[in-house]
Length: 193
Image (cartoon, rainbow, N blue to C red; front, top):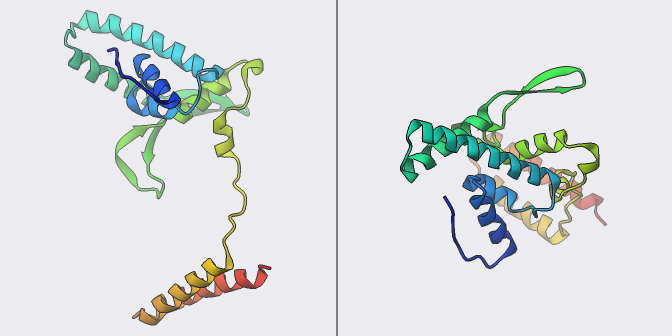
């Protein structure tokens, strides 16, 4: 299952090297954001090599000769790996963890659950020895973002658009909602210098 592609960017090279290390496309896309120097990623790549070896022993035993059949079964085994319940102890309590995303950002149930490589990365990172835990670029995304600066001109344009929408609204609840938004934006204009 070796993939050969001529890559021009560092991230593309990382993506294809992870694909050659038997990562599924979703994992390779996410982990290609990191360079190979991070201990958690090195551990994940090593574990994936052991998973692949065990899978190939099983594939030979079951007689999966075609590459297509092996690829389908490999993807199925990765989904099983991500959905398998593991137990972690934190603060004395035992909690079950899976690395599948079953709901979208708005809380709606997904038809097909997706794997969550970053949860797996965090789990691996927590299991590392203390001397190998150091910051990764991922930690910057987890930090709280600062205030977003918006110019007064942009706020006035938003207020103008909301007034037009309020005038076009047919129900009193819509008009009240638009008015609340106008009042909120107007209060931000008063506090700005």
